[in-house]
Length: 297
Image (tube, rainbow, N blue to C red; front, side, top):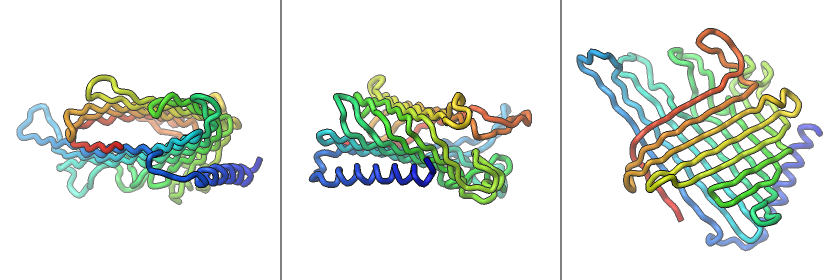
């Protein structure tokens, strides 16, 4: 099936689902909303400090929002995750802040219940970043930017949903699209696209699992795992996107968080410190304390 036929199929399916959804009389009583906004930072300074160190200030802001619609056999979930952070070293004259976190993730699933806990579901996920990224200390040539890369996953499959806090979705009919809209990065074939092209499409199987829970009083855990296997190119080399977030709430305004991310994409070549180039497991850890505000209704 061609790319145009695939996109047309999913477009018509989504339009049909939304048409049926819009026929129903809407009411805010079928919706549940929750969001969490946080701002954390650190400031470190040294005076005659024998052990050494660099004066710096760092700030990270994030926003997480979810909207759930449930009515009869219909379940529609929407999630947004946005974060941006940076660090500024005061001894770097003429050099601006360095980015430490940059996420823009949107996901939506629309399901019709087949039996208790099981849904026929259309799922979509979009992921990119907001501003340019650099391989410091070189801050003149960006290695990433908005929509370079950008990822869009579309899938039709079965969703086992125990609650809004736990679900497993699997699809054997999935499309993964990679966008590299920066001319210099696309010319180099970054992020798996062919040199000089700005777009790549893969067909395969997709699994997504979400599990959120309360570990103890004022301690929340959120986790997510996404797996994708390309049918046509090394299907045994599975792309991985995993995330674990621990949120420690001191009171209604003060909280601490610890977040870990693991990424693996067999089509992305990374050069290590020894000069070797090839696919690599990517790991990120972000720990902070600051202000947070939660809205839920």
